[in-house]
Image 1 (cartoon, one colour):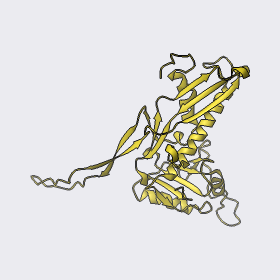
Image 2 (cartoon, rainbow, N blue to C red):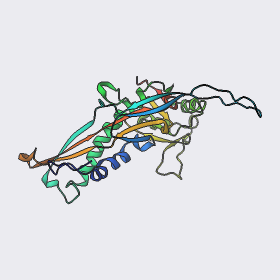
Image 3 (cartoon, rainbow, N blue to C red):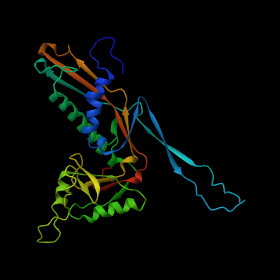
Image 4 (cartoon, helix red, strand yellow):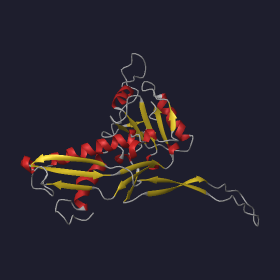
Length: 281
């Protein structure tokens, strides 16, 4: 992204990256869970294999069978009509400090939180209405199943459903309330020993049956996601903009910070994602 020629208020690409892109990837529960992120400045078309071939054993000099032409489909992300996430933050000149764009760390943290909250809501639960993002729980073709937080067997059933398709899931997403319910389950009635014991060797990590778990308030109680996150494709606009509005709020001795960024989501293999419990569609 080039610096604005009309004013000196639009930030350079490396400044935007350090202010928004890199911190946002770290703060977002979805971006930070290992999806495949494609940086693109325009509509992105990703080919998908519909049918494969069936290799066989052929003897010396034998005719190698022709299994026909391989069929492909494609998934389109970031269409031109996809809407952006936009926000304007205002701050007084008293908050201005010596930094690359003249805002303090608190304002930067607020910016990242506001954008990441909106983005995660969309990536997980977005309806796709009015050219917005269609989230994971709204995608078609996903694996479905029951989810009862008081019954850990429903988690094992979900793992088994993906394993039966030769899929190794890499991430759970659960609401805080459901995770707390799971953690409170005792081994037997009257026992004080919890069924799900924390791993002391992973003080900063949370796992369920060996699979990393993200606890988030972006999912409703009663719904969970189990996924191979390498099959979740996220398109990220390569040209997000952060513009300092130095004159718009001058009469209040304030400065505005306008942020515009675009993302989109699709599933390379919908069957590799299990949406459990409450239906999002």
